[in-house]
Image (cartoon, rainbow, N blue to C red):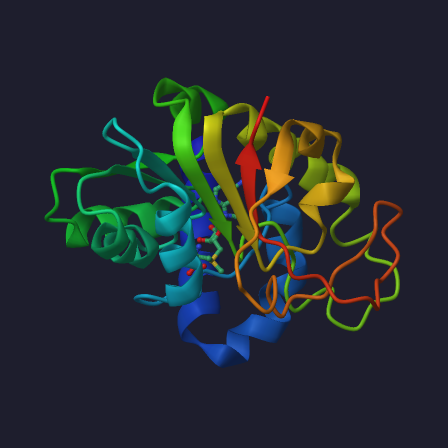
Length: 231
Ligand SMILES: C[S@@+](CC[C@H](N)C(=O)[O-])C[C@H]1O[C@@H](n2cnc3c(N)ncnc32)[C@H](O)[C@@H]1O
C-alpha cells in the first residue's frame, strides 16, 4: 500500500512540475494526499537569496567551530549547493519531504560535506543542534493563499507554529533561524521568546502574503527574517 501511495505521489509531483495542463486539475487531489506537507511546489534555483545568505553568513562570522546548517525544504538541492559559496567549511544537511526531489538532489551532489535526508523528526534530530536552519519558501501555501482574507482552511497558523517550534528547538543557542516567504510571522509563535531579531538591512521577508495568528490577512509590512537564539 505504501509503495502504491509513493508511486502516485511521485507521479503527481512529476506531472505537476512538468505539465502545466495537469496543474490546475490535480491541485485538489494533491492537497489531500500531501496534507502533512507545507509548500506543495518545488520551485528552486541556484543562489536564489544572495542577500539573505550573505547576511546569515555575516551573522555567524567568528564562530570557532565547524558550522552545521540545515536547509529545511531543500527541494532538488540548489539551496544547499548555493550555501556552500557562503559557508565554505560548513556541514550542510538538506531535508525534504518529497522523495523525488531528494533523489534528484542526491544524484547532483558531488560535495562530501553536503548530505540529504528525508524530512521526518528522527532524521532531522540526528544532526541537531544546527548553527542555522534555513526555511525558505517552505512554511506557506503559495499561491493557494494569495487572494484569501482568511487562510485557515488552506494553511492554518497551528500548522506553521508547530513546525516553527520544532525547528526552533533544533537551533543551537547563538545560532540562527531564517524564515523567508512564509505565510506567518515567526514573532507570533511562542517559540520566538527564545530568539531576537537580527538587524539585517533586508527590505522584506518575501513576497508571500502574511496572516496573523488568527489566520487573518495582514496589510502591514513585515521585513524580519533572520532570528538568533538567545535562550
Ligand atoms: C518552493 S520549494 C523551496 C525550495 C528552496 N527552499 C528554495 O527556496 O529555493 C518548497 C519545498 O519545501 C518542501 N517541503 C514542504 N513541506 C515540507 C516538510 N514538512 N519538510 C521538508 N520539506 C518540505 C517541498 O517538498 C518543496 O521541495
